[in-house]
Image (cartoon, rainbow, N blue to C red; front, side, top):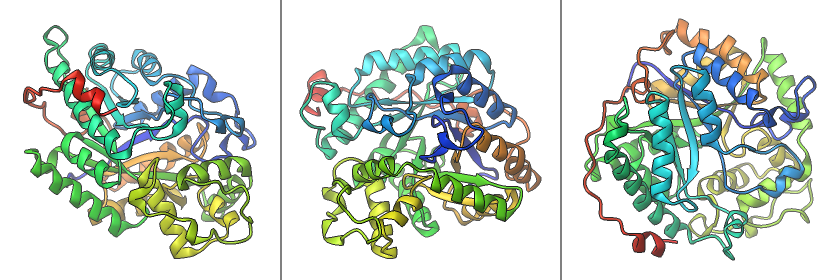
Length: 415
């Protein structure tokens, strides 16, 4: 394990909490302004974070009725950020299910070239029927099929980058980022991923996940040290423990219940509209994780909470209000730094994909409070030592890939 943490900030519209846009003093329309993203990226660069990260899906979800969504295409936003920053990494989400590999390789490769080698591509298979309908399909592709296509698709993109001799990148090629806790997802991570996002709630589960991914890389002829695991971390920072707790309670109160129900239904695969808010979710409604559609990672997390804690629906919605399944840490900068250090030294994480409760205020609290505390402990850099994302991550420039023979027919079959 390296001696210092790797930290990204997830610029998730108004913040990860479902009611973040309703917090007094916040601009509910901030996510519709490009300045929202560039100002956060500049602050991330000042703090010497590894990268900014943009989540995305090629569809406008129905939950837009209840909170602002992700509104700009990631490579467009990252191009603007690249023009206004110099060293912070730039990671964007682009679907392997609903893009063409050659066109996507050019789009990401061009952005990597003009940014001086700062780009990472988050490969997602895009779950959900809404996205499928957006591309003229009656239903989403089978889970295993999506991941099989993603592996072939990614290898083809990497091969395209290797052939761009006229557009060589200072980091060799963009960094491949991936997330997925299902069996198919972990296999894909071991096969092609360099930065792996996870959603572990339990430190022992997180360590087991990290160990499994690193062991899996060896099966594909890769080195375990060429992969970093970054669990998602939702943060609520206060100058005192009481202040942080009250902020969390207020954000839970601000959650639109309709949004919470809709989000939970998407994770569980069935409607919860007719369920009693003050009763536990009937466990007979839960399916086997391997049979669940959508994101199996988040389904497993939510199912585990239901089975272990048996919360009422109302309590479960509040429990998930600021994470959608990711871990939430509430406290002072010192307490949050303690938690991050514990996970890091235990071998459960190489760093974190930080999701502030509210943007930009929650990120300001994190950078101004938590980052100096981590630096004081020698756990995070005070200034950049490299100019590329691959350099920030401590990766060497990768060798040229094996010549993959991935035909258009194979990709079409995996649709």
